[in-house]
Structure formats: C-alpha cells, structure tokens
Image 1: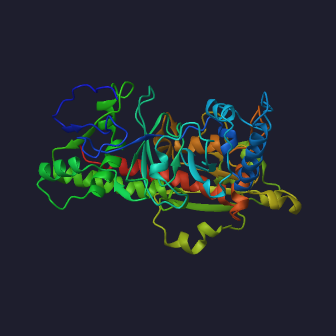
Image 2 (image 1 turned 45 degrees about the horizontal axis):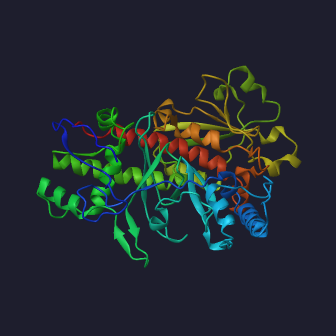
Image 3 (image 1 turned 90 degrees about the vertical axis):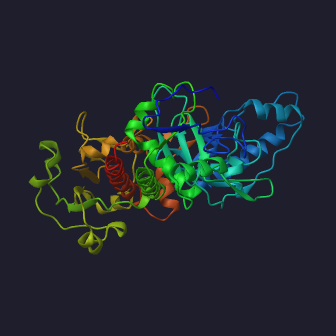
Length: 439
C-alpha cells in the first residue's frame, strides 16, 4: 500500500494498520493480514434474500455451464448463466464446476443488510482472503470492514459474516483471527503491536482483544476521522494510539460496546420506547392531514414478540417512537400480507421523522439523532430503506425479494422489527461515540 503522510504526534502514536504482504506475522503493523471484500462479478446470481432461490439458481447455472464444455462457442443466455473472465478461462480449459451446497451462508452485502451468498468454487471472481477468515460456513470470527482509499471519507462496520467488496464503500477487512490451510486459527492482531501497546502504557495485562476493540472504537472517533481525512483517498490510514492509558481503555471499552451493538443489530431496541397504536377504521385520513399521532382516536395497543408489553414496562427508554397500525382499515383477507414491504419511504421529502413502512404500518417520531450515524455517506436507516425493497435484475430477470428472507425464517414481522432495531442501534451508536473522551 502507498505510504501515508507524517502525522502530528501530539495526539498519540500512529502505527500502520496493514502489512505490505497479504500475511506477515513479523510486520510492524497493527494487523498481520487483511483482505478486500469479496467481489463476485455476478452479484444478482450469488446473493439473494432467499436461500432456496440461490440453491436452485446456482445449481442450474453450474449444470448449464458444464453443458457448454466442449462446444465451439458457449451460450451467452443471460437468464441461464453469468459469464466472467475467470469463468470464461475455465470453459476454455474444459474445467468442470461442482455445486457445493455447504457453501451457501449469510453475508453482509451492504450496511445492516444480510443476504444469503453462494461462495463456492470459481463463482466468486475475486474472493480475496475471506476464505482464510471464514474457511467454513460455521466459522466463528469477526472482521472490521473499513472504507479505505475512498473520497467519501472513513467508515467502518464490524461483522461476523463474509463482507462484500462494496459493503462500506471500498471494503478492506481486518480480522480478529485468520486460519491457515490446516484450519488452525491465528491472531489477526500482531505480536508487534501487543508488545508496543504494553510497553507504551506499562500494562502487561493488555490483550490482543483489547487492541482489536480499541481499533474499532477509534475508527468511529470524529477527531481521528478528521486527522486521517486527507490521507484516506490515497492509502490505508494508520491507527492512532493515544498517550493516556485511561483513554485507551475507554476507547477499547466503547469499541466493544459498539461491536456488540453492530453485530447483534437485529435485536436492539433498548434506547427506544416503542408505542404501537391501532388506528380505528376510518381514521386513515389523519396522516394526510398532518401526520400527528396525538390526533388519532385511541385504539387497542398491539405488541409483537420482540416488543412484548411486559418488556416495554421494564425498559428505560430515552426516546419514544410511535408505530401506527392500520390493519383495521383493510379487509381481513389482506392481513396475511400486512408485513410485506415493496419500498420503504419517508412521508415526504424533508420529513425524516416519519417512515412509511407499508400501507399497514407507519413509524413516527424517529429521532433526528438517529440519522447522525452515517456509513459511507448515508445513514444506517437510509441504507436499510434503500436495500429492503423488491428488485429485479434487468439482464437475468432474477428477483431479489426481502420478504423471502422473513418468510424462510418464519418471522413475517422480521423486517418491521429490523427497521425499529436499526433506528435504536443508530441512536445508541451516536450516544456511545458522543461519550468518547477528548484526546
């Protein structure tokens, strides 16, 4: 990687994040290895909300590809196969491909968007080293994805899943562990940085895990982002290690809090009191008037499994979000589809406090602070709104329907609950970052 500029050491010591080699256990960097995110070259084919859809489609494509071997020219039918330079070379060499059903697993395609991914033999054009970070579908590991070499400024997101190459922009992934060819795990944090940090602070009990989460905390810190902003377009920015041990400990603890929050983002509502209001039949014109929940006639409260009334009673909430439930305004025959989404949108331009989930549910009083949590130029909430909609790939005709993810998990209300969780996670993230000490 290109050399970074010289930094002012008034704030701390700057140590390069990534080694020059793909894996270098002796390098004087924070991590001994890193990888680009996976670049498939055929996203519509290998990613989908439906595991069943991927299974059938990839198996069919592989069978079709193998049938082209030995022909003078292969078929280019876009609804049967997606060609890439690597697959074209394999065909020219008469190389068959075998379907691997155990190579379908969840991946992080975009921020806060899980999709199923097929990452089997030869169908991922540029897998990077993610096979060393997640050698099997059941591998338990963490990676910090950083948006580096980008004009959009620094962003990051931690996950326990394979990461797409454009998940957070130009995704560079730094692992907690990596695995050798025998499946033996090794630390992603270098021995060099462990020794450096212990000597710097005079604390022999500091662990590599402490450093890993310190890195994640510091990557969110606004002052650090300001310091590296000019360099991030040209190189992987170095990591800043503050001079004060208590501040190191604070950033490490905060990084661990952020990691727990961002890895388990589907289950976060602790900073929200969520009030469900059943809108009586004939009251739908309230939203057309002014969108004010306090004007609604009082209906019956509604609760979901994730947000049961007894849990609400014990929650210490900083913000109150209202969910309007319009089910009584539609025929009973429509209700099996009441959690279905097509496109989530704001009430109108400039009104981010109100989100139209679908015709049955409207989320109101979304706190503006939630939109302060930005990844690669867009708030986490807006990433979810953009990605959780039904899309059809123009070339192949493949449909990617987020409702399939909820159906296959037998959780029809999954996307609505996820929307509320991402709002809560965004609020909590902003508050954790706001609590970091000055350096």
